[in-house]
Image 1: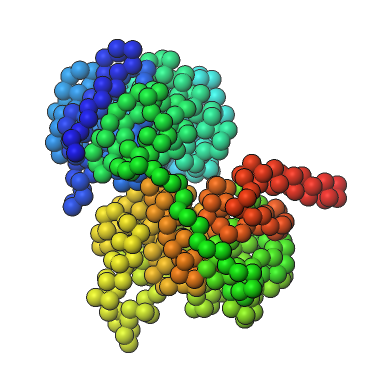
Image 2: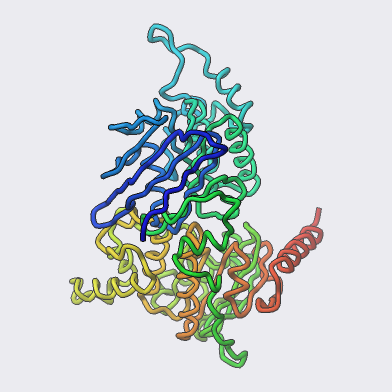
Length: 517
């Protein structure tokens, strides 16, 4: 497929940065293949694509974090022969990466002005507080200048990175997934700041898979697929559907796969939970899941859905109620006992609870079930490789290079590795906590297909997602969860998402009124 070159201009402005015919390879992976884009003053230019499509790599080439293997880079109309983060910074190009580069032990203000401190004759001047106050007046983040960065939550650390780029008077700012750790309110504030920067003729490169955010702020959208540029076009000429179809390379006929056949109520549940309570926040949950059935937990953030799942799996200590699996009471058992019975739990935090990032895909996927690939304590590597390869290929992991460290893969492919880790054990019950968080639309559909395929094979699925549309379109039944309790059941096939929200807020409000003052 040929590369389409977009002009990227806004009202005729000359480009600040251009990449022409740029290619970049990492080992056997072609991350960028003959890509050309241009970035104009006062433009918000979005790079979109599936995980692994090359959008972050392109942003890092612009910002000097990666050097291109071939192609040309022009800044201010002049070609540059050498390009790295220092030269980019000197030229007014900065990047806010997903992997933040702050100094944890320094304060917010010290991090913001690190490397651009004011000094005279080698002696630092005491203007840090005043400079920070002026910058804070511009952005309105409300960050405490004397707080140490290690004390901040991730969303606030991301704000420090944004202030760092502004402190260096960057004219081009590459933002890689800038809203991934922000609340809705914080995202709106960031978008207002982006519009403010745009009015100053600064250029924002907005790398994201959140299409609603892309359409809210972008002037130009460049669609990436498999390391190539599909097209660059004005945002007003695109729709969410056209962008997704460009990302996938095919027509988008359905957002969700067909729901598996309904399981008869006469089928005995494989999981039966009664009035479950735990030390971490489950306060009275009752639910049932049958073989071949997908059951959802619908709740607001902080409602206790994860705590219920962890208590069922044995990850948190149970303080009341019962969990029965396949007719046997397993209350108080440990996770390894649940796994041995055929119950697995895919956690929401893949980095800290799911994967060993510096180990290979093969090691991660086979980790929980090494006994299946070992004979007298020795791993049968051929069997292990065959099983892992089949698993990651079934989930369309790209590239299917099982010997590479999992840290080097995109977020969507890391999530596929995490799913592979548990599905390779051929479980009877799968608990999925936010299985599509942080992945693009293509990876989401692959995961949806894997979930429905499990149900069709007779596997029971307990599904947790903050995207209520996912639960309603995949589940046979769903329970409302408020304050660690199940508060009734809904029929997903006939209940719209706005009705779910109404019920959740109504029940939550009633619960609060019932509590003693």
